Length: 178
Image 1 (tube, rainbow, N blue to C red):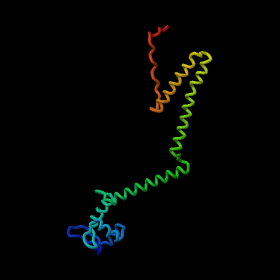
Image 2: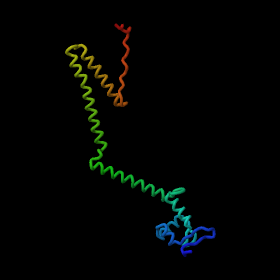
Image 3: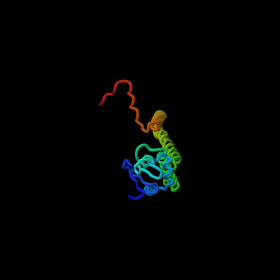
Image 4: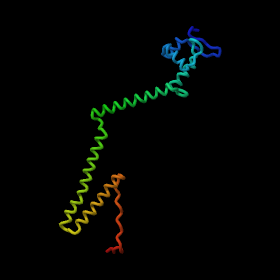
């Protein structure tokens, strides 16, 4: 058996510090830090390979409960991913692929105001057309149309949709169909 391997009395595989560091691709200083952090060590210079692998798996969150180091690594990874995403978005904004939200909001607000003014102008146009034929009805027609348009705009701004109210029933008897 090579001199860097020992078998304990209870048949566990033990490796010396140099060999376990080589297998885990770390240096012996790292092994000393791990030992201080709670990594199981059989005796001076000798390590139980299975116990070290199990401890290291928990330390990086592979099995069992993650330690503080694993939680810190996860948090650091998430932070770096968020920073990369933010930088990517800034790059897209600089290259013109993205438009700032404030600019979009201003433009959409301006467009809706233009639509509102255009729609509210419909009642004036209808009143002018009716006035030449029925001057006594023109002003009432304008008032009614203005009211309906403003009500529709209010409902759209509050609920996103306009459903007209059903016509009110007129008092009296229904007309005869001829």
